[in-house]
Image (cartoon, rainbow, N blue to C red; front, side):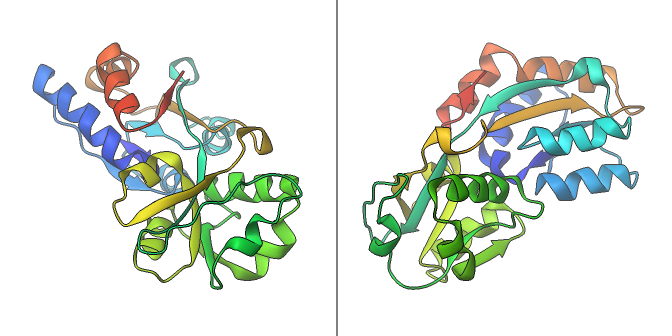
Amino acid sequence: MFAAASLTIALKAATDTFTQSTGINVRLSFAASSTLAKQIEAGAGAHIFFSADEAWMDYLAKRKLIDEPSRRSLLGNRLALVVPADKPIKVEIAKGSDWLKKLPPGRIVTGDPAHVPVGRYAQQALTRLGNWEAVAPRLVRANNVRNALVLVERGEAAAGIVYATDAAASTRTVVAGLIPADAHAPITYPIALVRGRSSADAGELLEFLASPDARQAFTKYGFLVN
């Protein structure tokens, strides 16, 4: 399975449960949804694609590379502004607010808006909130959300915009504030079988990930379950 980097911890937990109950081993490959979609387009041997946004699933659908009837949106998420745990602050993020002035000087990191879903959501939100022009010169564009989080954990960025689930899993960052959910398009995680590579095992896994047992694993790590 090719899956978005933000799914790493929760999906490992869910597939471990699946393997224990079925004996079917699952090989997972995590990266930015854009990277994975391009790899599938190039012929990589994924059976399932689990994206962090609809756009990259649409990208494969337009190229007839997914099994359309298998496609479904399983999860949701929120955006969080995080700072290093040893420099905690709290800000209220809203349109017209001066929350940016409360951040320490330094770089702000998120996924590259050109192709990483979390960066796309972040750019959309900051634009609607009227903050994009101020943030853009300070922006570090990471190649996936996990790498963005690491830069904040190391103190190499003053703040980062990541998924709330990644923030919750980190002990070296704290949430300074949540990005208003209505400032960006809904964050959804579609999943589908890759066309021409489906199998009985892949189909069984796909069904399991929509089951109550898998939902329990995802909600444990902070995902919203559709």
